[in-house]
Image 1 (cartoon, rainbow, N blue to C red):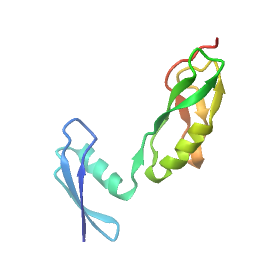
Image 2 (image 1 turned 135 degrees about the vertical axis):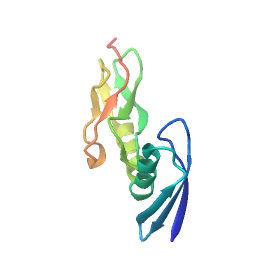
Image 3 (image 1 turned 45 degrees about the vertical axis):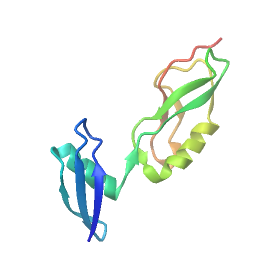
Image 4 (image 1 turned 180 degrees about the horizontal axis):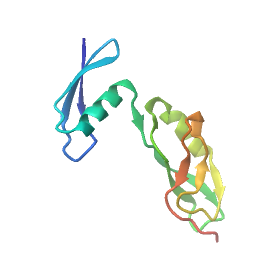
Length: 121
């Protein structure tokens, strides 16, 4: 049996959670004070995901870069590849909050979107 110790990031409590696994299957979750912690822990040990934030290049804008984020979580093991695609992205101003900067990043089905406005010069 394997044990993993986690600090929950599901809410401000930051519960110290212990997950017991056997053959990749969750047997028990302890230490959480709410259902969010249980769900977080199960997901974290079986299929960890993250939201990725970064910046992308803007041409002809009042700012040289725009802040971006994945519209939802992506598999944690794809973060490096997602960052490479974001780094290669170049958009022309204007760009508005919610505009898609990279569609279906790395085949995840998740778009990368702008999180601020950049106006054209």
